Length: 194
Ligand SMILES: [Zn+2]
Ligand SMILES: [Zn+2]
Image (tube, rainbow, N blue to C red; front, side, top):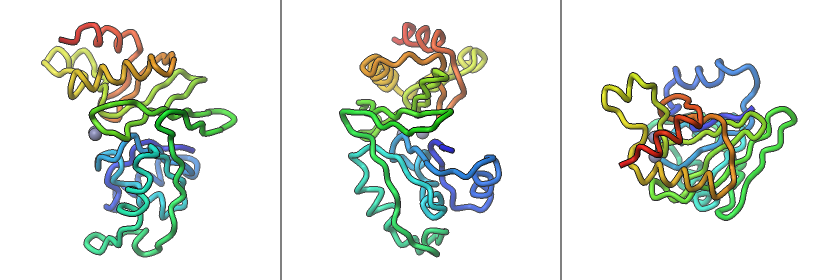
């Protein structure tokens, strides 16, 4: 089973939520990029033996600076039981396929100024695309009170360009922030950009 973007998992509550909420062992964790709210919980999964999926440009950063750190201020499971991380990388100019008989996942790099190591996860069978920080699926209620479904218009355009570049045809977009929007809403939001 795969998980996306675990936030900070040092505290016992969020850690137990990860491991109790899912019916199967988590074997692979995809980090869309290195920001703490998407990668802060990865050490717990290294400690639990899961493989970590990141953009190739940040493999050394995660290996040395994140998983290799000693964590003396907030000791965690990995500090107590150090182990080498199993890291799978998404090539800057290619695709990483995570084979699974029922739910294969493809991980694609997205050229974005939000983070140089940005990737998105795509479930081709279901037409589901998971992104973080580029597009934020919002309900109409939230848009009506003035929220916009992106941090910057450029982030949003970067994602739209990346989807087109890779020839993806998602039916729905899921956000690490926000919820889920059908592609029709994504396209309407894109057309409404200033
Ligand atoms: Zn970010
Ligand atoms: Zn974020």
